[in-house]
Each structure stands twice: as structure tokens, then as C-alpha cells.
Amino acid sequence: MFDFVTKNKRLIQVVLAVMMVPFAFFGLDSYTRSMGGADEVANVDGQSVTVREFNEEMRQQMDRIRGILGRTADVSSFDTPDSRAGLLDSLVDRRVIATAAVRSRLTVSDEQLREMIANMQPFQVDGKFSKASYEALLQAQNLTPAAFESKLRYDVALSQLNRALAGSAIQSRAVSERLVALGEQQREVQESLISGEGFLGKVTITEAAAKAFFEANQAEFRTPEMIKAEYLVLAAEQLGAADPVTEDEVKAAYASRSSQYRQGEQRRVSHILIPAAADAKPADKEAAKKKTEGLLAELRKSPGRFAELAKQNSQDPGSAEKGGDLGVVTTGMMVKPFEEVAFKLKSGETSDVVETEFGYHIIRVTEVRAEQVKPLETVRAELTKELAKQKGTRRFAESAEVFSNLAYEQSDSLKPAAERFKLQVQRTDWIPKAASKAAGMLANPKLLGALFSSDSILSKRNTDAIEVAPNVLVSARVVEHRAAAQLKFEEVKADIENRLRRQEASKLAQQDGAARLAELTAGKAPEIKWSAVHAVSRAKSEGLPPEALRQILSADPAKLPAHVGYSTDGGYVIYRVGKVIESPAKGEKDAKAAVARIESQVGGEQFAAYVASLRARAKVEVNKANLEKKGQ
Image 1 (cartoon, rainbow, N blue to C red):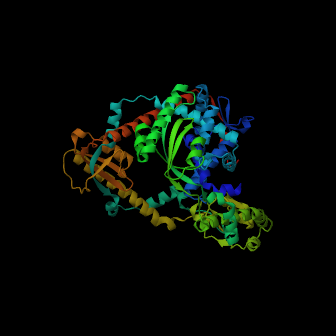
Image 2: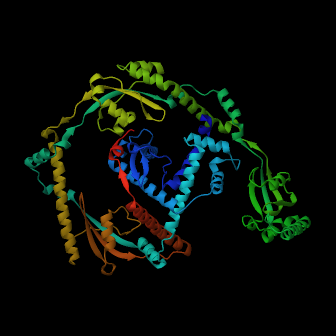
Image 3: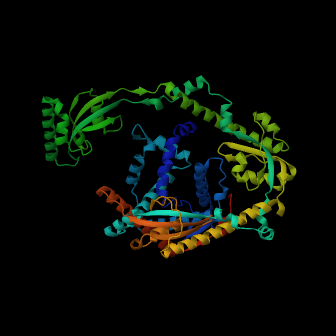
């Protein structure tokens, strides 16, 4: 199983992607029921949102964030009361939507479900569904086939509900086209910044004002509690590097995976199809067969007319226009009678009439590609890396408990564990208590919490070995501690005066800017230096603040040029709105795509309104204690 998962990492990611796409709207519905309120985060019309389900969703959310920021990233800042409440809201929405789908009798038949799963690429081997791959990939994700199929059945039904509601939104085409035009309509803009920097010389800050600010904001002027620490890292990657992969191991792995590197015989095939359903009347089938035989007779006389006859007569819409070309096929891709004939023909040969469940075919093989095997040299680097990772993971599994025990049992020093595993004791610089990136490898909330605990600070003992990333354990100990302290006014006086000076200069700049704007509005011409002309629109803000963009776009087109102003932390900006630039006419294809986007947005809003109405009618009870409880 370990080898299979390692070899098929990419496929597993695809399976997860396939499962996650429907969840973008609906998520994972609960397939378990709570045994009581103590195990609930919420109850929606009698259906539980369990603690286990909530924690699993939170874990997946944190894993996605970690995947973006890096595996050692401190994601604790994302686990806030607001984020937990938002996650619960999404789970409650899923419950009410699932109930609506069931009431609407949106179901998926067993046959549809089987076909759907059989056509999923990650579950196929050589173009055919593989039960072994299916079960192995699900097992790698801790899913049983029954659970996966149940989830898939629910998600397809829920997707049907979403499409039905979003697709029912009726939007006037004229309105849609006008909204598209407004979205792409541009304004020519120039801007002038009145910066506070130019007013610094006019500002004087007294010591009394600075001291009053210090007294009112003393919490801002404290040095945080800090530590210096030493630590050990036990990582699978490091352990694997200590046991290099041998040539014999590479060769043995290559031999054991020969089927993985073998590409079976391939054939480029063309055909002419005259359809005849299996349940067609005998007379209809006979007519189809005779027509096919007549075409075959023409081909025997003029073999070079195959593509011409296919275009004129074949009723396979996918290949007829291409002269009957089906492309390259391998075993298992075509129905059995077709395949048996196609793989017996030589390149350039044409078959007799072949009957399948689709009707009657004339088959021609245009190219034969012999079986190929990737040589060892082309896969050596990939295979060596994979084997090294496997070794590291195995050694990590074997070593983790011993490492943890040494760190705990000989807690006054990291040296025994370092010597046992040939690791280097590393040291940090000063780390503040609220550290994140500054803590480097120690930037893990659980590990930092252990280091800043009173026990670690007072006793200087090793922390427990904590998994800071998959297959990475860290144990650390405090070597030096500095308590939080209040800074003296004299130490921060210069910084405070500079801050206050800039604040007052910014206010003066804003007053000056507002006065100049008033002059411009009154038709006067104050001295202003404008930037070069540039265009902005709702779709392309060019970095403008939202409020400034709103004012620019709200300027009356009939009264241009117009002027608007916007206050910033550093001063004031005046914008001169020159003229309106209408969006150029679109081609039919682009116009339809733009209108479709508007209609899709309207449909999405309608679906959101529907969900809100379901939510308003639902009886939702939240267990706040379980919602706020972390690390369950």
C-alpha cells in the first residue's frame, strides 16, 4: 500500500480534486449521526454537525493554508473565533441544502453512479476501470468504497439542485449587455498627491504632547517576553539521506515495477460506421449490413478512397469529419469485436465487415506502434528520489518513539538524543512570545506554547517531541529568558515625536487638498501638478482604493472634466476625471461569453438567496462551548 500511494501521489491528488470540486458549493455532508448533544457543535432541524466533522473540516482548511504558505508555516493565526464561526455557517448551509435536495428527490441511480466512477481517470489502468486502483486510492484517503460512493451520490444530487436553481434565473439580455458595457467602460484620470512630507517643517510637537501620548498608549511601548532556545529536528528526509539508495535497490525496484514503465502496443485506427442498434428490426439490420458491404467493395477497388468514403458515409460524428480517424488506441479502449479485429490487422490493411453493438464497421489500421518500455536511465532519478523518501519515512516511523522517549526521559539536555541519531543541536536568536516567522523551525503554536510555559522557563527542561510538519519532530529547551518590560519614555520619545509629527503633517496636507478641490469645483485654477493620463474601470482599478474608484466612476459623464478627492494616511489625492471611454464592440463569441458571465453571476446570487431562505426557516442550535473548544 505504501509503495502504491507513493507511486500514485499525483493520481491521489487528482482524486482529491475531483472530490473537492462539488464541495466548493456544498461540502462534505455528514454521513454519521451524533449520539447526543455533547458531541454536537450545532443541530440543524434535528441533524447534527458533530465535533468530529467540524474538527475534520478545520483540519482540512488548515492543511490547505499550510499547502499555500509552506508545511512549517504557523497557521494558528487563522484559527480565530470568526473563522470558526464562518466554518460552522458553511456546515449549517450544507445541512439545509442537503435536506432540500432530498425533499426535491434529486437522486442518482446505481447505474449512473457506477458509470461515473468507472469513467474517473484516476481509477483507470490502460484505459479501463481498475477495482484494485479504486480501492487502494480510497484506502490511502481513509475512505471505504461505500463511504466514497455515498458522498459522491450526495454531491451529484446537490450539484443538480444548484444547477436547477442557478439556471432558472431569468435575466434580460439587454440588461446583461448594459451591465457588461458598464463593467468595461473606462474613465481617463489624472491625479495629484498632496503629501504630508511637505508639511513636516510646519509642525512642532511639544514634549508634553509626546508624554501624553505615551501615557495613553503604554501597551504599545513594551518589550515582549522573549527566549533563546536550542532544539533538535528529527525529519524523515534527513534520515533517508543518511542511508543512501544503492544501485541494487534501484534495479530491484525497477524490475518490480516493470508494468508501470511498459506501454503496450498502440495502433492508429480509422473506421466507417453504419449504425444498427442491437434491438433494430432484422430488415433494418440487413439493410445496414448490405450498405457496409457495398462500401467495402468500393474500397477493395479503390483503397485510397477510405477517408473520402468515411466522410461521405460514416455515421460516427466523432471521426467522420476526420476521414474516419479514431486516433491511437490501446487494448481495452474499444469494444471487444472491434478490438480483436483491429489488433490482428497489419499496418495499411482493411478489415472485412465487423459487427458490434453499435452497428457495422469497416476498420483500417494506418500505423502500428510496438510495445515500449522506459529504460532504467530515464527513470533512475525519479526512482532514486522515491526510494530515498520511502527509506526516510520507514526510519522515521522506527525512530520517532525512541527520539520522543529520549527527549522526555533525559529532559535536562538534548545531547543524548543528538548523539543517538547523529543530529546537530541548533540554537535560536531571541524569539518573542508572539513569534511566527521569526521563530523559524520553531514557528509552531504548540511548540512555542510549550517553550513559553512556566515549567520550560523555570526548569529549562526539554519540551515533548512535537510534530511540526508531516514526518518532522522537534524537541526544544529554553536556554535564556527575558521577561516582558515597560519601556521608559526617554527610550521612545524620539519615535513618538516623529509619529505625531507625521500625523499632524498629514492633517495639514488633507486640509490643503480639500481647499484646492473646493477651488477646482468652483471653476478656479489653483497650482496643481497632474500625473500622466491613464484609464481605469470597474474591472481594472490600477491599484486605486475602492472608495476613490467609486467616486471617479460616479462622476457625472455630462459634466466632465470633474474633480474628486480622497484622504490617505499620508496626505490627500485629487483626481481629475477627463472623459468616458466606452468599451469597444465585441465579436459575437466574446459578447455571448460576457453576457453568460453576468447571467451566471445572477444565477449564483439567486442560489445564495435560496440558501439564505432555507437557513432562515431552519431551526439551528449552536453549542458554543464545543465551537470554541480547540485541539479536540
